[in-house]
Each structure stands twice: as structure tokens, then as C-alpha cells.
Image (cartoon, rainbow, N blue to C red; front, side, top):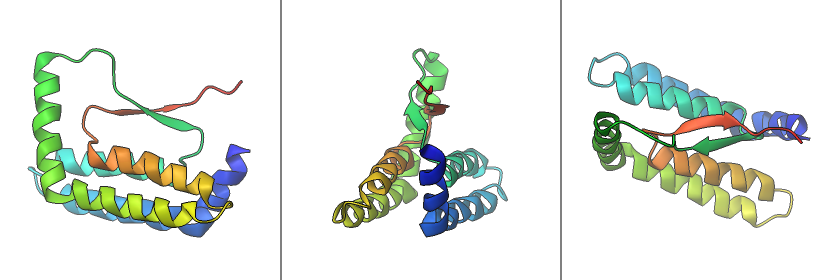
Length: 130
């Protein structure tokens, strides 16, 4: 079922969303300062390309330096672009919730919204099949 939903997602906008994140990641990686942010764009692009069957997790234990790094970079991310990206995914989710067919896709936009708001210190994992 997730294969079919992922294919529909790709056809109806997922490929475009992933391409936008990839372009942003490439542009950010052109500067040394932007590389960590570009890597996060690539991470979000991977989820945007094939979101069904994946979940976002926060690693259980992070070193103090890693947690500080994630926090500082998340603050910079939110102030520069994260809030606007979050709001755009949230708006798309609300519009998709208006139809029954769009509900599964709305949940994927909510998943992307969470990752787009605070991407540092988060990991994407496959959901085990039962």
C-alpha cells in the first residue's frame, strides 16, 4: 500500500517538493557556512521524495556538544527559513485535509513540516513492516 501511495505522492507534487529541497541544498552547499544547512535540505528531500513508510526520530542520547550544535543550528534555521517552510507544509496539509482522498497526503505534509521546522538532531527511519 505504501508503494502505491508513494507513487501517487510523486506524481502529484512530491517530486517537485523534493526537487525544491535539492536545489536549495545545492545552493546552500556552495558556501562553507551553508553546508550543514544544505545537508539538512538533502535529508528533507529524501523524506519528501518517498515519505510513506518512514518516520522521524530523535536519537536517544546525544553528546553535550552535539546537542548544543543541533540547538544553535536549529535556531538559525528557524529564523532564516524553517518557520516559512513549516507554515507552507502546514497550509498544504490543511488544504489536503478538506478531501477524504487528501488525508494521507496531508499527514505526510505534517511529517515534513515537523522535520522542516527543526531538522538538526533528527533522523529518518523506515517503519518496520508487520
